[in-house]
Image (cartoon, rainbow, N blue to C red; front, side):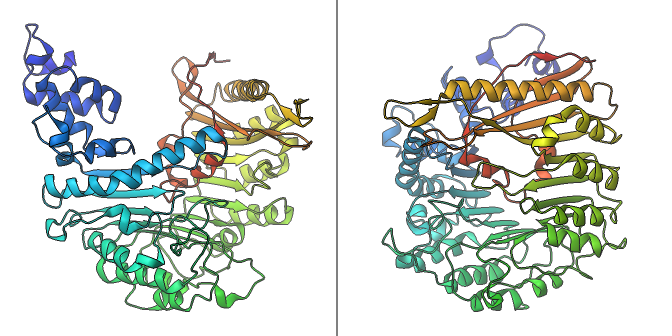
Length: 572
């Protein structure tokens, strides 16, 4: 702040409230998205309230803020200045499904009620008080809930054109059969030539799998699996959003009818986006052995879009990408598709990034993957994801798998993988193998630690003390991070490491009352050694995330535990 004042030529001390308005705006830009600091500054004085309130509400990403945005001017008395809805450019409403334990469920239900009650009023105020076509992004991401899109959006005056300049739309919510026509009309208001990115997302698997971007009857327990509804939405996107550069589609799990309507959409030459660069398609409804008449073949769609540079194909129906997508630089999919993409490489694609999902402990699958990777010398970033069994256990990569991948991809700058039990026991040896990658800059390891110190509760069930489990996982993470610090202490290129540890239960005995625990540990390489820092994914791993909440959103089924400070890891 002092540097800003000196840059403005103000040498003599002046009160913070006396700064000119343009300096207030510069300070707000320096603060960025720190809502707590911005909120505190608005309480200093009326002048600072006017200066920082617009920055505070420019990008809204908390459901609780909807209460303020939904208020009328009379309810804001004695405040007489501009309504906060005047300043909203980005509305990002996300209610995650964090875990199945009662405290998280109560918080989730509370947030859902806030969204269902106040979002329609907030959108109405944005259309009334905001400038014409002011909203740039609209994200409604509800993992559970049964309120339809029409009711969430409410009655917005179309003449206000609040959605006319939207650039990004992301939806994970219900499209009820009972008011589908109204929902489609509301959605049509948000679709237009200004849109560059659209996401149609489905919920997490499990108890909410029929609730999010789904097509349900008005009764909570009934499901209408009619692909025609989804086809109508895609048809509107094709007609009205010709300038899309990014399109992410996740087919609802419960649609079990043959997808003739959807197949017609993807086959039609009118469903075309000349500027499309990123495309994600997820359909995991059927196994590979089931009737292929129920799947959607998007091959013709891909042939119409040779400019695609990033492709995610998470489907149980195999397709061949031979001879198409010459500009592909990033591919995410199951092992069979990755093998196909790499096998048809022959120097025709500038493929640099691969995100592969392995299916269980099939060693042949791993061998084929390594052989395919050897054919693509341009790969710089590799994520090897493992299939979770019962959400508690992963097979992971063996020491041999790790060595083979390092030999197949010697020029990696980013590597993410999971160690199996034996590879974890030989931790230092395998870290040295990874350390032989001279260009490696960023490493992310997923690992599972089994804990089996059970005690008998008052009802005779075998259970686990949460504090013991937490201590066990925390010590395991510290041990692993120390090992990484020692292994990469003298590595010239290495910058950051992120370790995600899932503390799960050992051999199941009786009833387990607590969910698994997730802890994240991160270190960065500074001038004087490795420092443990914030545990969240940094931007270096954005390339593995095609949709905003994936694949990291899979972690929300576990109990996330926050930790803020750890000791410094001294260099070797």
